[in-house]
Length: 152
Image: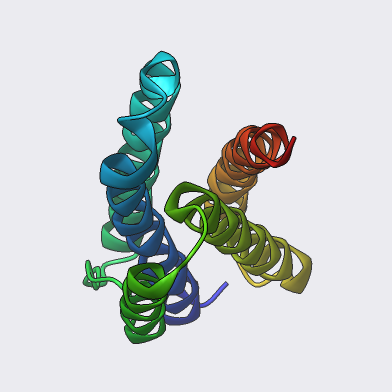
């Protein structure tokens, strides 16, 4: 496995993880205030995301490369669009926010699955990415369940 390519892929996943963290921070002010009983679960997901971020940075540095610890431009544009859209939403801002988190988690799952299917990661990186995919799938399921509950 080429360390350069391994680090490049991990940096892409790091951007996705940073996008997730920024997205979760957006949710905090728009959903969890009304659903304080879910706050502990939310805090756990934020902590897991930050651990995931650190794991990716460590893997990149182990390859002798520099981690690009920023969010993606696409993620920033998406969050700006969501903020703008939510400012005009006639219905529930909470519902719209949850829908966008679910959408973001679906995209993260797809990106992680694609990376793993490519077989381009070294063994250690692939194992950590598999573990992170498991956590993202759990997060997706939780947000999807909340979204479905709120639709009732």
